Every structure is written in structure tokens, then in C-alpha cells.
Image (cartoon, rainbow, N blue to C red; front, top):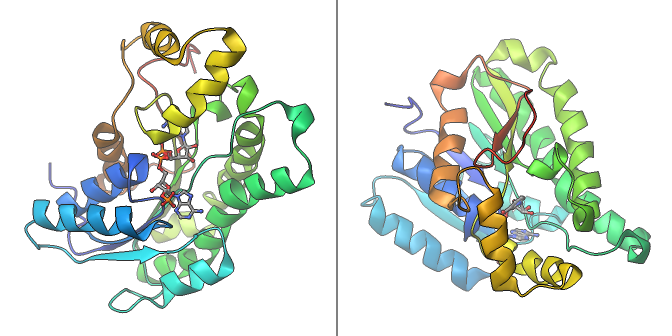
Length: 266
Ligand code: NAP
């Protein structure tokens, strides 16, 4: 299926590895030019180089090694040489998730960090680009959130809370006047994907349950109806579809990619 987005420009956060990388790759393979953001320059540059080789130089790929949760980081993105300024057609918001823990240990600073990263940063990025998309009659915004928005995970309270704030914002903003101007905003909710993020959160969960990390991996995968963790490539394919011409009539949705883990009918 031709997704009809070749030649567009996308900004993808957290794109050096994991789910953001999966989205950047899937879009680039569809002919989209991608500005890829992550803090660590070495891993990011390698990811861009590899993708350049995979796409045969057919698309423009630009690395911006900044912290996307800071104003200075976002300024650097808007001003990067060769980029589209703020005239993006596609925006995939994503940064690292907050650490796991016990809510009794989180102070105001911990909460502000989580809210900044997982709620206010996506809102700032949307604010900077959405009206320009509407003026051009096309825009696709996908926020990488978490299945924890629908089915909270106790040790991920910072994530449950901050991402719920973003979800509420998107529910309203996606149905505002921009909806009639070709701009969609959807959230893509990962369940359990085999990335560094899951490798970072497993030890705390394993310790809490008195199990080894390997035991917990086996148990968790057995509990997923699909029988396994997801991978970034298949996550990226869903993201690319949401960014496609074909998904024009789909907005304000929370799309689960969780191998069937969420057991609700709706
Ligand atoms: P990951 O493999 O750890 O990748 C995170 C990416 O984001 C890396 O490229 C990282 O590079 C970048 N990043 C982190 N903080 C950043 C910042 N402040 N500014 C710019 N880039 C930043 O994580 P993932 O599994 O892809 O997860 C992506 C998102 O989905 C996270 O918010 C995570 O909580 C959420 N999620 C993941 C799962 C899962 O199963 N994997 C499930 C539910 C939700 P640098 O560190 O170099 O910046």
C-alpha cells in the first residue's frame, strides 16, 4: 500500500533507538524526510547513517542531538540547517519515560520532570507546528504514550499521571477547528516492546515481585495474548499508517499496540 506521504517532512523525537527509531525508519522507508532527535549524538548519528544506507539516500535524514524537553533543544530543532523550520507535515512526539518507583518517594521535582517530558513537551511541539499544518491542509501528529493510560501500572505512577494529562489535552485539541483542515492528532499506546526502556523498568518490577529479570520476562510474555513482546519495526508500521493519507478520517484516538494485553471490550 502506498501511504501517500513521500516527500513530506517528519519530526520524530527519541529516534536513535526503540519505538521512536521504529517510527522514523518506517516513515523514511515511505519516502518521508525525517529530522531525528535524541540526546546522545553517537547512537543517533549511527542510527541516521544506518537508515541512510537502508533507504539508499532517497530521503533527507537529519540528526539533532538535543534534549527535546528543553526550550533550547526545541529551538535547535526549529533552526537546524537543511530542515523545514517549523513547517513539518508529520510530528511524532516521544522522549524517555519516567523512572519506576513508589509514589511515596516522588517529590515535586520528580513530578515536574515527568510532566515536562511526557505532557508539556508534546504540547509545546504541537503548539509550534499544528497551525502551520492546518494552513497547508495536511498534518499528522502521533504521540507515543503508553498502554498505562488505559491500564495503569502501579510502579509507573509518574507515567500514568503525566501521560493521562496529555491524553486529556489531545482529546480536546484533536477535535478543535484543525480537524476540518486535514490535521489529525492520535496517540499510539505501546504495551510491552523489547527496547531499552523495558530493560530499564524490569529490574524494579522483578525485585518487587521477588523474581529474577529473566523469570519476569518469561512470565510477562506468557501473559500477553500474542505470546511475546512487540518489536520497534511493527510499532513503526502502525505509526506510519496513522501518518498516511489513508488515516485522514481517524483523529483523537488512543490506539493500543499491545499484542492483545488490554482485556477490555472497548
Ligand atoms: P528507549 O528504547 O529507551 O528509547 C528512548 C529514545 O528516546 C532514545 O532514542 C533516547 O535517546 C531518546 N530520548 C530519551 N529522552 C530524551 C530527551 N529528553 N530528548 C530527546 N531524546 C530523548 O525507549 P522506548 O521503549 O522506545 O520508549 C519510548 C517511549 O515509549 C517512552 O516514553 C516509554 O516510556 C514509552 N513506552 C515504552 C514501552 C515499551 O515497552 N518499550 C511501553 C510503554 C511506554 P537518548 O537517551 O540518547 O536521548
